[in-house]
Amino acid sequence: MAKKIEISPESILEKFSAPKEEADFLHSNIPTSQISDALKTITCENGVIQGIKPIKENSRIMGRIVTVKTDPDDWGTSLKGIDVAQEGDVLLIDSANSFSAVWGS
Image (cartoon, rainbow, N blue to C red; front, side, top):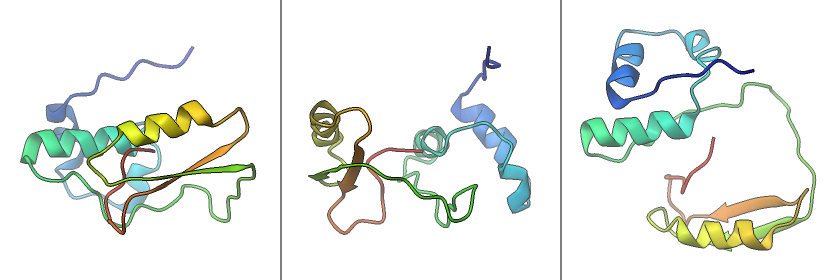
């Protein structure tokens, strides 16, 4: 069974406020979406984290693509895409030329 992680805006701030190396984030076990949400709660600003990279280089996924077009403040349209998608499909969320994701990790 996976270890339960207690997450709050305060614990995120404490964990990531000290200077860190990129490698420090690789084993944090905290999804980027939760970090983004916590930063938004703490700062009252968009919690977008610039420069996030995949943990594994050259990863590829395959499947039928289900595309939804929305904007970063509308997560409901993405939920409709989930309802349409079937097992094995890849959900692609086009968030209107924004640098902010709707959600994800």
